[in-house]
Image 1 (cartoon, rainbow, N blue to C red):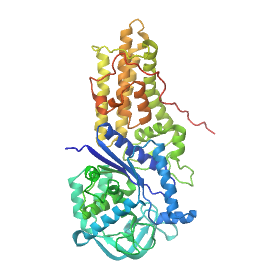
Image 2: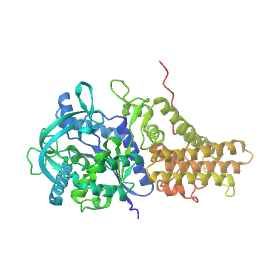
Image 3: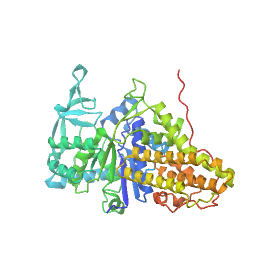
Image 4: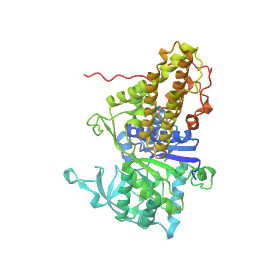
Length: 518
């Protein structure tokens, strides 16, 4: 039985620099999932935030002449600002420098240390470490770079490290993890990431170093002066901190944990599907239900880099185009789970075709005709009209297919179904030609009422994708606030009552122009 509560998270962003377009994409995708679950009537808790510890933060702060706390405070706020700019509906924003998170991280550490006669033990770490990735790598995972440098799979430089450290007995969890993947085949998505992780675990797991002594910007290890927690122990624990841990008897924790979905980038899949479930098993806590790893974004078909000057500033994009069109592009243009591309020409074409021309034009034309010919009052439908009933039934079927797609977070497929329904409605509108029915006002009114109803249903389903525009469209249709759930879009017997007074129509989506050459 599906529980009504639904807990979804982004990865927490590392704020050693400004937010980039990839952060925006992850926020928007996760927000659309959260909004869709709310649309279904689920009790949703949506968490995002910033991961503020680790050596990279210390090094960046030193370069900028700031204290590490000043850097964390400044940059964490930028991620809050980005969430606001993109109309993200998160219920909480966690910072790993908060006192509640210190308590949570130290408690999970203590529980892991007490588990299985001690899953945490002290030894000396010797191995290859990437500061940029905050990760260890085996020698066979490395490649040779320029000047004899050793590189991680990500291309980041690694250095040989030797230090006193606490270790986690990850090697003891190989069989339990493989059993988890077998018993929950949807635990890791998409399929290629699942296959990657299963192959990695089957090769054999090594114990992992989980403390540092070379810097102090982190959460202190309990009863171990001079040691701070490895940033991934600290970072992953944010997911339980956000729902009240260490108070695992609280109503919030019991309602929302285990998390239904962690949305992350594909580069950190190993930490979320190997380390994190092992930590939870060790601490005696339920394991999250699903991890979905999305792809990366390029810019105009090229990898983003400062040297190429093609890094996309998400704030600038939203300032120019508005949040809804940017959100829609991410969700419609990029296949969920695969890599995607941000391109201005593609963006303008997609937004104009799907939003301004398809969705916006249908609403504007039908509502303008209702205002002009019926005094802004919704005309009655003709119940026996086969074409009217057929196009409404097709719209409902399309929204049902959206529901199926969203069950596995196939955001691009759900958006495609919405567009297909609107295209069918535009074809219906053109074929029925209400503007030519001035000698049959009843038929004109029925066509307009049918079209307005399709717009209503589509706008309800579009709320997770373009929340501001969809809400405005529902306002123009005088749809009450308590009739904007998914069930109201799928109910074949629910329509806007005849003679309902509608507000004056106005455009909802802008058309954009391509940038002029030169």
